[in-house]
Amino acid sequence: MTANPSGRPQADKDSPFAQFSLLGGPFHDFATKAATRVTGGDSLVFFTGLSVFVWLVLALLATVEGHADKFFSLGTTAVHGRFLVAIPLIFWCEKLLAQATRDACAGLVSTGVVTGEAKAALDSDATRLERISDSWWLQFGLLFAVVIFSFSAASEYLPGESAAKSNMTSVSLAGKWYWLVCLPLFRFVMARMFWLLGIWVYLIWRLSRQPLALTASHPDRAGGLGLLEVAQAQLVVFVLGIAALDAAALAETFQHVAPNEAQIYVHVFLVALVGVLVVCGPLLLLVSPLFRCRRRGMIDFSALANAYSVKFQQRWIGPAKPDLSELLGTGDIQSLADLATGYENVRTMRVLPVTNTLLFLILCAAAVPHAPLLLMKYPMTDLISGLVQNIIGI
Image (cartoon, rainbow, N blue to C red; front, top):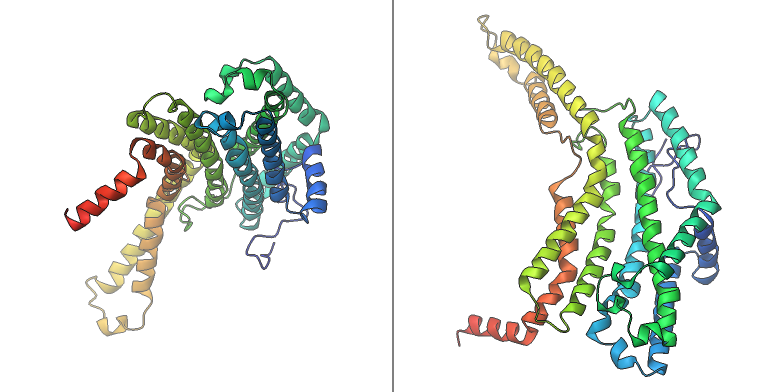
């Protein structure tokens, strides 16, 4: 397997696992064909346009029926957040995650981490999962379940005051469009995202149970599985969408009550916790094989380091009093330093392939959408005025 000009590993055409794709099924095929005709093949632009179109129809109906003041008020922030922010972010995340997972699978095969018996088992799993993902009955069943839920579930299942049935949402034409079209679309997009996550988590679980060719001294400090962290990092975009939804719903509650700083911090913490579970949780499945790899690597490298150190000391520091001028040009010292570096890689190998950078990104994704809520408690003009007074001392 070779690398293409884009820097991504080329998929092994004989390996279903190396070519594994999360995206598939009748809805994806239809959207791909429609995107090719409408946007020249960019499905993300097509899906974003669809979400904005649904919102524009809702806004137009609300305006025509004389509810523009209510529709564009703080009390419907969650409505705008769902269709102008959350759905586009979810589709963007799907696109990023599908490409990253495929690159990760292809990379694991190309680097030899997945080979032999493990490759055969994962090829079988990938074929079965893609067959399930492509089945029309499953995705139509998911859509049917979402529609039935939307008709039967109480409005309290959605956060924010805009989810509560009022005269506008239960009687007006805008309300019917919202409850019969907008919410089922939003719920289907969310359900589909969790379905894709379920497929990917299952594949990670199957991967964790295979005899992988892990390398304890691998520079990624994850035995060669660092590619999976890169794939999971794409879910930070999904966390950003969840945070935007939560912040919008919280803004609706501040329409009638004063903004509570502590409440905002609690929501940021809870969203960050959910983000850690979604992004890092699946990687917990890899702790056992990585722990075994690290333990085996520590034993092997300790034996190697001890043997080399004994030979090095006997040759250069022992009682034989060697000619130290021979040190100039010998590779023994460099080899000893390289061995120490390899041992340090093994010692600091992570049994959970998660870096502090990924955790920081999750925290930022949870906090950024909530930051504007603080301006409701501390107006921007007051903050700027206070800053200027502190700087110039008046």
